[in-house]
Amino acid sequence: MSLVRLLGFTTLACGCVVGRYRDVGTSREVVYVEEKGQSCGSHGHRRNHTITAERLAVTPPVGVVTLISNPS
Image (tube, rainbow, N blue to C red; front, side):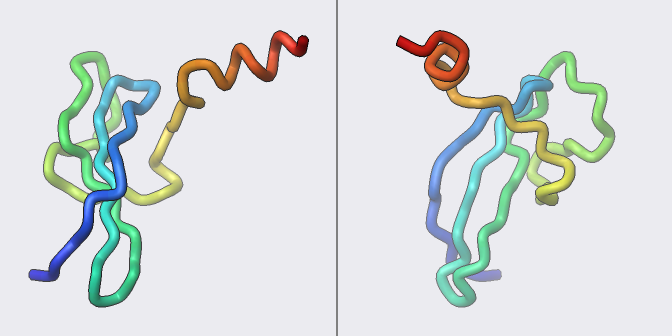
């Protein structure tokens, strides 16, 4: 078991909430599924398990899409 530092939380497009952590000893970033979304159909998204980058379906933060699609 290693010491980790919380970097933040993200809600995926499927509704799952993942937490990003940095392992203090190795500086490796680890992503855990904190809560599974009610409508998530991914078998790879399991609560309290790590998730790999290729399985992340991250949506842009609120406001970023507006900034990209509506230039002023």
